[in-house]
Length: 434
Image 1: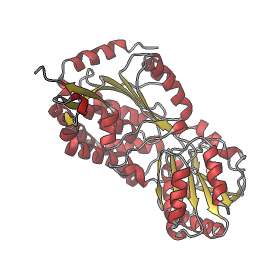
Image 2 (image 1 turned 60 degrees about the vertical axis):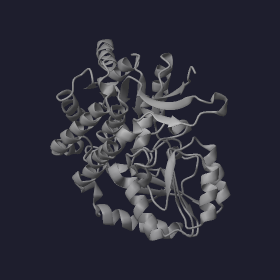
Image 3 (image 1 turned 180 degrees about the vertical axis):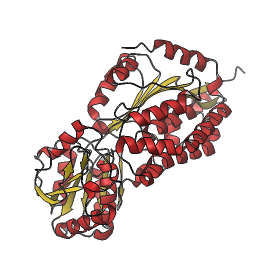
């Protein structure tokens, strides 16, 4: 197992030189990163296609487009974010002045997942750069083509004492976590998140954990079912369901269940065609191990649509399973695949209690025009973030911090929240000697 102390020492020395504290240096770095991404867009798209069979249209939007947009937003606002700001001073310290000064932590470690292997690696890196840190990036070994592109993109154009990509298997992540980084940003499963948190605790290293969980989608009887079906299908089956904020399971009012399921079935066909297993643009499951885990859920409940798979191609078509109980195997852990279990309800208080009893999810989606119900759900269920009458869209806004709570994570990023995450806010009170 390699020792990364020398790399970290180089980054510490570079950080102490003060270069990364210069806001213009940070902005030039971000501009250079953006230009590199744009110049190598096709290589990025090809890599994501090879790793996950992600369609070019989806990859352009979700992998490249979101990152470039994040960089542009950061460039537009970084100078004001990085300013030292004067704040009011308590009356007990009359004559003094009070300031809050954002400063970088030092050297950050970013451990990225495989499901959006470019976006979820580079987006946190943007925050690390904006905050004035040096950074080591560890991409996922399950998406080797994208990992190689990231390595070339960063390591060929930035000095390793500033930014560096380290490729490798699980042992590489384990070795990196033994080092005394100043900040750790991890995106992945709750189980691995606990391992990262334990490693960080040994050095008292602050950490952001972007995890997952079983994100519920509630469709009430007054919902616009045509829009709900399209938006649920789009959110659930993008990237073959391998999205941390995808609707994990569907809670639908008994009065509209049959109608909604019929519309969902039609929405899937309109998006992906009839023979989805042969669709060259439908995403693949990342590995045989994940495929086998997902295939084990296909006999739960009653099949509404889908259920076909190709083990050799690692494809499972969009599948809806009805008559699911809370105790079924598919309801025990995050699915992270193109299978949507359905539970019907008639009493909203019952589903509120059911969701609240479970680990706090990363996202929640509610389809209803009933504002009293909206308020009741928001007031009584804890979750990372979500949307009303939509899915996924909250995570694309620069103005909405994105992150989990409880078992679905800690900390947040996107927009200014990324700068905040990778910055320590130093409070200063300046008194006069007069």
